[in-house]
Amino acid sequence: MAIKASDVKVLRDKTGAGMMDCKKALKETDGDIDKAVDYLREKGISKAAKKADRIAAEGLTNVITEGNKAVVYELNSETDFVAKNDEFKDLLKNIGKAIHSSNATNLEEALKIDFRGESMEQAIAAATGKIGEKLTLRRVLVVEKTDSQVFGEYVHMGGKIAALTVLEGGNENVAKDVAMHVAAINPRYLNPDQISDDVVAHEREVLRNEALNEGKPEHIVDKMVEGRLNKFLKEICLINQPFVKNPDQTVENYVKEAGADIVAFERLEVGEGVEKKNEDFASEVKSQMT
Image (cartoon, rainbow, N blue to C red; front, top):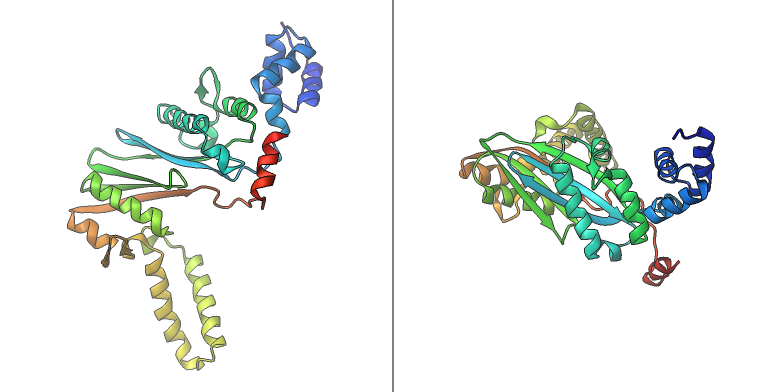
């Protein structure tokens, strides 16, 4: 049957659900708005909409590798309590498998893929209603390698940090060691060539002002700044960092001893860049009861 736009609008106003969800609900209920409201509630979509303004800054990250393809991703919840739930962990794992087996290359595409007969976005909204907290698939990174390259993966603290490395040559053990280093030290770049001129210029200016404020004579400041800048650039680049398992050698030296080179790395940490609410445990438990 044809669904009227006016009915879709009424249903959206009643439930706060998305336009496509409302249209589907009306089709499933032969245009009966009251039954469509129940349909959305049963699917958890209406309930999810009420939680849309909540902050989902907890959760888990994960890495899935198979063949020449890897997926690094983050699924957020509102509380760490839910993130430890087996149902949440199963959802995390199944989401990763679905993305890996799809043609999705980023978050936007991942949310549109089929997941148990509906879109990934709809499935997560339904899980929000079932679990009782806002869930968000926040980041998805898809990485591909060649047959001669090797993946290394490491998940820290049960999923609080996930790291992936790609090596040319070497083996999975070496690649995993580097992934562990990436998880622990959090390098910003692979090598100095990846650092933009703007970043270098900004850091040079900061270091110059810092030296001048220390009262250093201006005629030696520039020389000092270049020395400090070179040190800074080495510290933020993976290949130049002291290897976490053996600080006497750099990561690059460790990898080269194994006959390999680092091609790329990715690192996700739960809640990066999200402003979290400051709630005590009692408030958190109370929020689960409402």
